[in-house]
Length: 93
Image 1: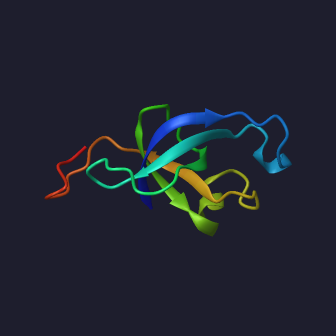
Image 2: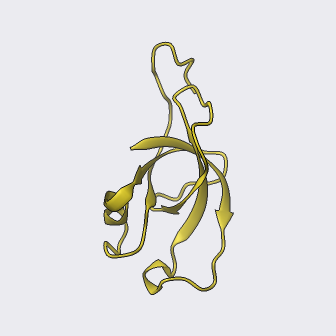
């Protein structure tokens, strides 16, 4: 799992039928000190996250298991909303 911040949302009126009804959000990967760590990704929201929230997301084949459609073409899924990060030397979030 990885840390990220929700920076936006994506609307796609035409998509794979397994993604109909899915909320798609733009996630900026971050390090524990909130420093950006790579390119943004589009993830399916499974927890009701919103813009500006720090989240935990899964990537790869396990991401689709977090949704109601395990065979959906999903590379990233938001699986948690972060309350706090306590990592010595990171400065926290």
